[in-house]
Image 1 (cartoon, helix red, strand yellow):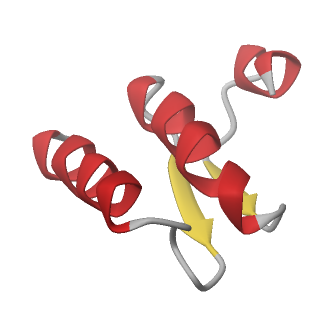
Image 2 (cartoon, rainbow, N blue to C red; image 1 turned 45 degrees about the vertical axis):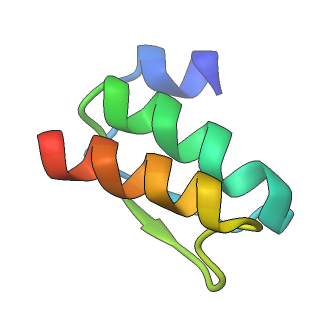
Amino acid sequence: LDDCIKHKPDVAFITNETYKHTPVALKLARNNIHMFIEKPLSDTKKNLKRLSRIAAEK
């Protein structure tokens, strides 16, 4: 993921295991990279709230 971020992509597609969606999405959001996340967005409500909060700040 870090190697990908170094190339400053316009968008990233998150299609890995559901439990990995939130950590990957948070890292991408912190680096101002737009993303598409496959359903479900997160594995827990707690992680979904974290992701929503970060996205709202952007």
